[in-house]
Structures are given as C-alpha cells and as structure tokens.
Image (tube, rainbow, N blue to C red; front, top):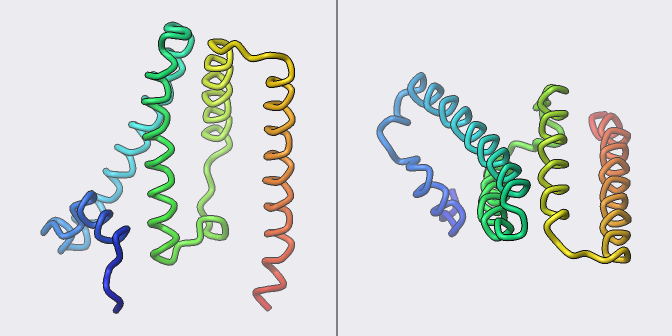
Length: 157
C-alpha cells in the first residue's frame, strides 16, 4: 500500500477514522449512517438558513450567506473526492437521489440564487451573461450525462 498523501491524512484526521469505534463492523456501519444523516441535516439547515439570510438580510447579509454556502460546497467536494479516491464512482454507482429530494434541492438553490442576485446591483448585460452561462452549464451537464449513459453499455461488453 502506498504512503498516504495529504488528502488521506487530512480525511483520516478530520473524520477520526483511527477511532476504536471503527474496529467493529456494526458500530462502524451505524456510525457511518449517523454521520451521513448528520451531514445531510447540516447541509439542508445551512442551505435554508442561507436562503432566509439572503432574503431577510438583503445586501448586508451577503458575506454571511457566502460564509454559510462555501463550507457546504467544500463539504460536498470532500465527500465526492473521498468516495472517488476509494473506488466509488458516484456517476455509475446505483446512488440515486429521490425525485422529491432533487426538486427540494432545486427549489432551495433557486431561492438562494434569487435572494443573492436580488441584493446585488447587476446590470442587464451581467444578468444576461449569468443566464447564458447557467444555460451552457445545463446543456453541458445534460450532454455529459447522455454521453455517459450511451458509452456505459459499450464499455461493459
């Protein structure tokens, strides 16, 4: 086995993965599930708090909203990176969010984006650029998913 790099050392330390709790399989499974529930609760409540702050606090709340949303993004990035580095390809794994969760997340994200945009003084050209950019991201995401689904059966042969 190779020597752990900085990311592995960081995740082992931050997740306390050397704790004796992880020695017994059932305890490890229950703790992992509890941690997943806690992470999801934290992400949803921080997201909701950011939406409330953006709408209620206006321009003055903008730095605080960023202060809530940036750690959420970082946590998601670390989770996905950790999973990928340990052999889980979340794009091909049978990990699917329920339609209700996706709709709720989309509504929360739209409310957050709208609340944040409302606090800024963006000109028409900037708003048009945001709309075009978001549209391009959507098109690229849909195309990548379509391409991935199309290629997957050919790779399994």
